[in-house]
Image (cartoon, rainbow, N blue to C red; front, top):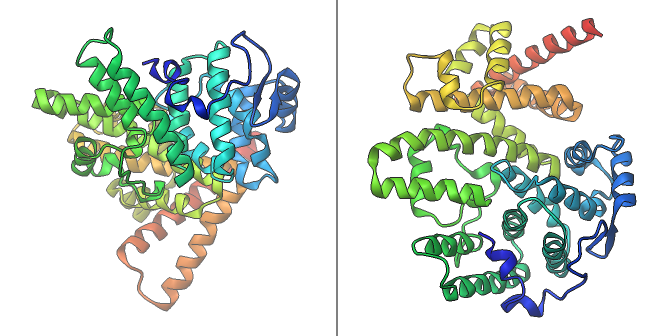
Length: 401
């Protein structure tokens, strides 16, 4: 899987001019900015994190849409993310969508140069899982939707595929999978819905399965770990129906968690209210939360959300409801996780709480003029429940302090 670094100097070499030696260096240049110890320390201080770069990059991301000139910090933040290995695992999917939103404010020529700089950084430093992180960067760029940038990416990707086709040392079918992984970054006719337009895997298993089996480019393949998970599902569907049935809810649950994080990431990057409203819709569509909202059982709901926040898989979540089918469990876990995202985020960020409360007021005014539709009524009930839970949690915290 080191094909991206191996092929960096092939067909795309006309654009990827060398800017630094291959010797390991504590300072790099990203988009004409020096990024060394002095710059990263200043970055951490600016975001109130002392010398803790991981916390600084998280703070930068969460305040991006509300920080003046936030795009100016992109090079140093990107260097920090790469050095932490933050773009290498399954959790890189929300990072990928955040970066695509952040990158969109830069001209295409700058993004071509930035990719060149990132490739050199990955090659010159001991960046963890350099090739996988470069893959995530490429996929983030492909989500920007720029014709000029797409032309560059296609040239680069074709170079990678050509190199793979000529390498005799990679056995089949591994070489075929590598080619598919590279080609999935930017297929000939990519479908790129906005992140809040995607269905929730855990709440639409059949649709999720169809997307994985029949679409080359989707939200689920915007990172290499995501592509690999989708490839495993495709392989299982072709070879073993029982294995496919076992993997489907597990994979859907993982992607659902990534989608919820991606919605928050894009909200923090753009300030988009649609992302928050999508989380409300997901939570409000959950039968269990509908029942709790009708009962007004605030304490039970808080216990449920906090308990669900501590589990890492739908199988652990099954302990709460041992008599439910996997499909129902995954759907319930999806909605409960969305509700926890809203509660936890609104407790930490007043602007999120304000947006949700504004929506309550809007629906309240609408309800005084007409009968709310079923989705509106569910959202109204859930938002009221979230408001009560937030007030209760704030009261608890104020007593502790």
